[in-house]
Length: 385
Image 1 (cartoon, helix red, strand yellow):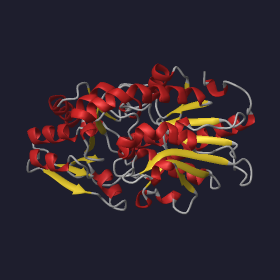
Image 2 (cartoon, helix red, strand yellow):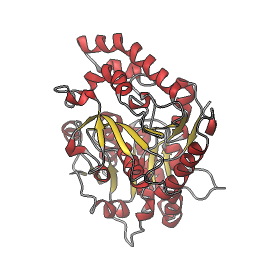
Image 3 (tube, one colour):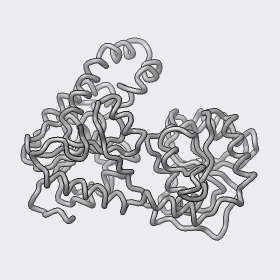
């Protein structure tokens, strides 16, 4: 469906432009799909706007005008529910929120469908609440505990105003059902899998791609490769970089932020891609598979949906899953992979990755938009209740 540029009017909301990650890739595809849509968010750092959104209409909430709100955004989130509700979207016939957090709470016209593409319910308020509390110290911790009930209530009530939820994985769909009491349609996020290729050579290194933050558990990759004396290339930067370099042995190489033009060859020539995080979906493991390379991943979260293991009816294995989030379990998984390395078929791995290609997202999401616009004024379409 090609959306008419004059009708309907579409607004797309998202949390902020402060860094680039998986959710920004969804925004870029939505921007391409709906070229006349306007964008709304909490705060904007012009240098962090995704390339596909540059030059588009982006309206920030009143938080953007508060000094230090960008730099200290987590501390200003107590104002986010009010900021979201203050954004006037009454002129729009359809609202798409690419957010499971604050901008999901915008107030729309009664006849305007609101589709929420939910990357996850707000993690620090729901499933990771106690973990997040333990990470805070002193007055900040007690302030968060005191305010979190208010924020959680706002988040829950915002979810009840959404017309239709779309989850980026079955893992997230279960979370939406548990915390919001809402059903959701699963549409996997767009991955440029069709751009992948199979190299005629494989080099002797394992690969990690992603931000160097605690939840990615790159420390486990380093621990395992230190023990086995395997070469590991780490692409990415983040606040954990200094600590990770301190524990890395001589076989570990930090490549920093790798240009997009160089990343495909690194993917295509690795022995396997290592992944120890619990992700809601996890784009990088799918990218690795689009180049025909196996994935060795922790068997929880999105990896259970993106790495095929043990489903012979669907096709050959595309990787190895390890059962515990420990260095020892990863060592065992690497050794199991190496014992059967020749049994992984690059063409089959790539074929599996194409299930997650951007073209699949575009077709599925646009069909949902067409359905929602055709059912304006009706309740409960797409199994939302």
